[in-house]
Structure formats: C-alpha cells, structure tokens
Image (cartoon, helix red, strand yellow):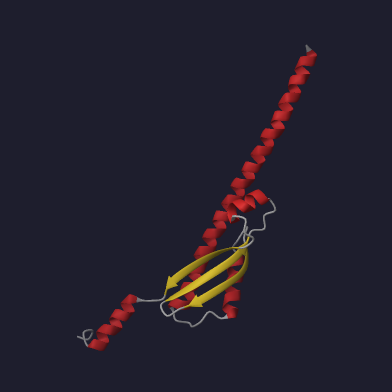
Length: 148
C-alpha cells in the first residue's frame, strides 16, 4: 500500500515541474510584453513632444547635439529598450524623427516575438509643421481682407 502512494507522488512531482516551467515562461512573456508596450508608448510620446518643441516654434534644424540630447532624454525614461540612434529629417511642411532601438532580452523566443528576428527595430513619427490658421491670417492681411 505504501509503495503505490510513493509511486503516485513521483508522478505529481514530474507533472508539477512541467506545469511550473510553462507558467514561468508565460509569466515572463507577459511581463516583457508589458514593458515593451510601455516603452513603445513612451518613445512615441517623447518623439512627438520633441518634434513639437523643436519645429513648431521654428527653432531651425535638428542638430547633432539636439539629436543626442533627445536620445538621452528618451533613453532615461525607458525600462527595456536601448536607443541606438535618432535620425531627424525636416522637410518644407513636415518633420520626421526615426529611432532605432535594440531589445536586450536573452530569451530568443520572447525577443523574436517582439522583433520578428531582427537585431535592431525602428519607430518613426512624422509631424506637420504647417499652421493653417497662421497662413490664413497672413493671406487675409496680404490680400486686404484681414484689416477692418
């Protein structure tokens, strides 16, 4: 009688090992995905804010010093991502900021889930510099419709 109980106890231990291992993997995937989503939202928000601060006021071009300062400012708010470089392009009517980043995750399955097997990923945000109200105001003044 005692032997049968001991043998069954071994089965439960082996099953528990498999179940706990799977649960740990699932829990890690959920935690990493939460951190990844947080970091993506922070990067997109910060890029929009930096573009608005720099180009909506007409401060000029995005110099290398400004890009490095923006990279450092964004990197300080992240939990998982590592920012590699920032590239800013300013056109006549819009400005675009692209960020290249890396995920320092040693678990290949989770890393490939987020990055699709690529070493470096990127995010880009474009912002229009056009201020239609200002242009309409200027047009009305130039054509004589704006003065009373």
